[in-house]
Image (cartoon, rainbow, N blue to C red; front, side):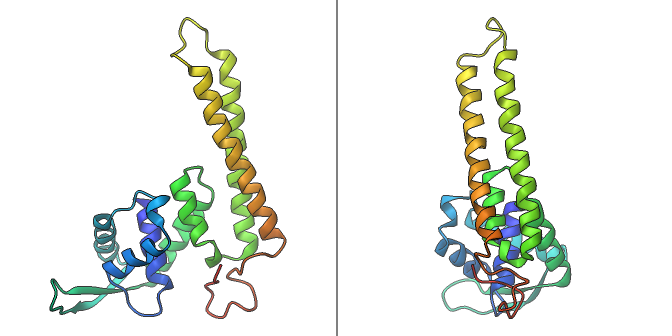
Length: 194
């Protein structure tokens, strides 16, 4: 649920006018988020309602519609901004691909140095997991070993090795000044445009 919450808060935060569920979904579809998340339309609407109940979003009322139910407009609150930043920082250190992807989508909401710090932590965690998986291979006695466990451990260590390498490349680009970040002088509203 934290990935859905991050995506919903992030999209509502980005939009210059109050937003509603279908507009959030349409924005995420334009990013092809369905290819890198399991976010479904129902989870977007559920998250909007939950975030409003928790004070992270403010409902501005419901507009009537001639083509179906009215749409409720939302804007982010100070509590929602705090929750967004908390979820964003958590996502940027995650080794879960969906959560990390959501964090990368909104990383420009943070200062460059903070993103670099968080991604260095994520890279170290990925490398640690890779090493731990490889270290497990000799520990599996063959009589207790699940079928193909060595291959599975090598597969997952390779996944985390690739994640470590990918993160290193992103860090190099960030350290070289690529991408606009929240603290860059030309970022007028505090939200960069990647």
